[in-house]
Image (cartoon, rainbow over all chains, first blue to last red):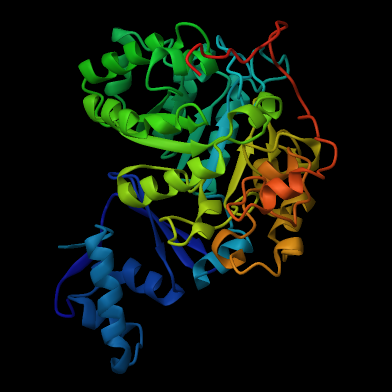
Length: 85
Length: 371
């Protein structure tokens, strides 16, 4: 997914919480937990960058952690929180 | 216990799941009513006050609210409140006995967005259901479900409180849900409200709880439970969902007069955190009340501390303990290890719920002729 152009699903709202954020999908009424504040920042910002890796770069995330972010984003794609654009 | 659920014990900035009971008025008199509903309370929130509650929920980013009662559709401003909520981005799921869902109302409901409906049904046949919910209530619920199906509402919920008498009907409930294109939701009977007097006769036996655990494991995520059966996790394999008591941490109740309680099953002064009419409104109650602050603090495992299943069941349900006279830091009355039964034998006095809006007629648990 690192080179895919992505964005937050337009029907998803994010609510900041101490552990990260709570995402609510208004279309399928599912709640999803984003379990780290930095993944929340990345998700919110996906649309401002050409692809995932440039978003990660822009957020100063060390390349050795990109795999973890890639996995987290993949699971958010599965739950339809993040979509291709 | 994951890191996430550990964080949830400290409470969230806003609840995930709010139950908002709009009225104590109800046309039925179910023997297990958790809010002892029947008669309207003269102090119930006005339409304007209800709108202000919605405004607060929207500002706190509470994504949806579970509306109930009493029978919420009795309120003349029911649709005004629901439409105000959904158009504010606060989705609504409401519980109803179905009395007020005729063909035209079903069509109106089907045309609305961000709306979900839960029809209460406590028996897969009229005899079992009506013994709990009253004469004719089975036919009423089935008629409402037919109207919703005919109107193309889509996947509504059928909500069943599990009792000793309907637990053998789990597959039949599932079949009814499938027949209407609905989703089955089953929840735990708590000894709250009028069930303070009927719980002992109605709650499932230990053997039945084992069957229920197996059934839930087999049906996984197709059946909703409101995560209400986490005390069964002590039987071994954990059920899906949050394994913790969410009272005051991720869950709360706003009652018809605006009182805020830790959960829908503890309508008692002990768990009253404040009122939405107070200074600072609901947000202040959620964020700063002494009652909720205390619930978010470290909880003692008490008598359960030496039990190997503590991590699995977390001591069970606070409301179930409270309204059976058990200490909150001890076993659940339905502890699957059998410790609850033992504790009940020496339980203290059973607290009475703080309010009683029952109609001035004796509500009696009718015995079915076939048991």
